Length: 304
Length: 251
Image 1 (tube, rainbow over the protein chains, first blue to last red):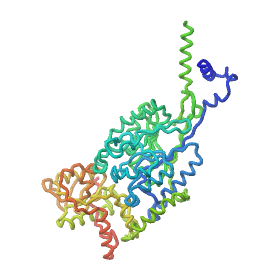
Image 2 (image 1 turned 90 degrees about the horizontal axis):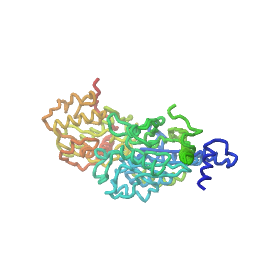
Image 3 (image 1 turned 135 degrees about the vertical axis):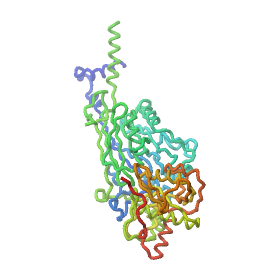
């Protein structure tokens, strides 16, 4: 049995000699293509309705119902869809003051979000305020560097996620911003903030090596970059290994398109962020080719 | 024997090199603006879910409480919306504690919208401007702390400050600080009106945490609403009495 397997593999490895003896599928299988479409938002800030007519260039933009319609359309055309949010879902319109996030979470659950990370404004009604919304949330929150174990949210927030999309395994980790000095202590309570960079690298390596993930996404609410040495998406990207994509937020940057940074291994890390209030949505299409290490028919050079 | 070893080596080499992996072959990206022109459709199911919440919200938040003659914008280092909000904090604090306040400060990103539009102001819009339940507090602080605070404000690009203070920004630091027309005296103490978020060390204003706070019990948002309601009752448009620039960039 073992020997047959070897022969089958070597047939492909050594070229045409054995092809006649094996079904052609074994060749096409090796070039199995999978496409994954990622749609993402950040800093939506309770913007349930589109901006009103007097909102200048934002007039008519955004709104959950329009976004949902776009998502439905793309979902119907996509092989695999991944819908993600990088935090600060809450706070910014009276919908949050009146209903505490209930509507935001109900709508996101209905839209089919796969994951979100925790932004600083998710604490605005306190840990208990967020916990109260849990019955309305049917998607996982991922945060790798907030430790909630000494809070009422203990056990509710995931450290990482592994999602299988076709034959591709996608690993997701989440990074949150330093809370002290940004969020009143009375609101974040006993939540511990852990240094994001080492956590990001540990988690990405774990997802790659232990969980055998093919692609690793970091949902970050750290901010794109700062003039100081404050940790940011750019700093994480440059000092990381194994992270492929950082979907960011917090700094409300309307990026025309994603940027790439080189990581510690010289590999490209993609960073994207789409402003705020849902007036923009990011779309990233990934094409995966299952093939031998070092062989990829459809591969393009990202640095071109 | 030698042959067998070679054969085994070949097997392991092949099985490694032949293990299939997922190559990321191609990446495409587009960041789309979700405007009505390009995306005219709204999901009916979503609209139906939203409707009862919107009705409940509009019945309280849709109330028109004032009017502006023109758009009032926030900007850095200084802007009319900055000055209006800081002056309301200053004046409300003075009325509440019944003694003079030296100056008032509001963090820039605590103003959550870019502008009050020209025309009607609804209650909901003021909630959008100031969604946080922050209280108006008064602190007695040292001249050295005033300098430290002004430096923080300068390093962050300029925040809303009231008519009681003026300064320039030079290389991310505050220069020529004037309090009520007089140069800042580092050995004097001053009365600061601000929100409890900053007084508790928010936005890295850690140096304020050493001072005792007098909490007026007034939400900053309510101070804004009361000002708008009162001005409107007197027949005034909002923002007409905003005085001149307080923070300026020094070349």
